[in-house]
Image (cartoon, rainbow, N blue to C red; front, top):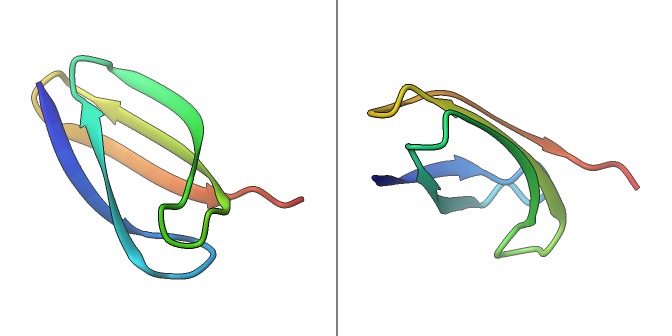
Amino acid sequence: MTEEYFFQCPYCWEEISMIFDKSVYNDLYIEDCEVCCNPIEINYSSDGNDITGFSVDSIEQ
């Protein structure tokens, strides 16, 4: 089960979206912004039905 989730990039502030697998209960990874290509640390949690926690942070270089 997946869900599209919308949020703002911490670098360019553009609204972007990603698709998350809600069967994964906790995940932390880095993915580039589709607009400005800067790396974003994404951390989300799910209860299997809904996304229950979500945060994004910039990766200082």
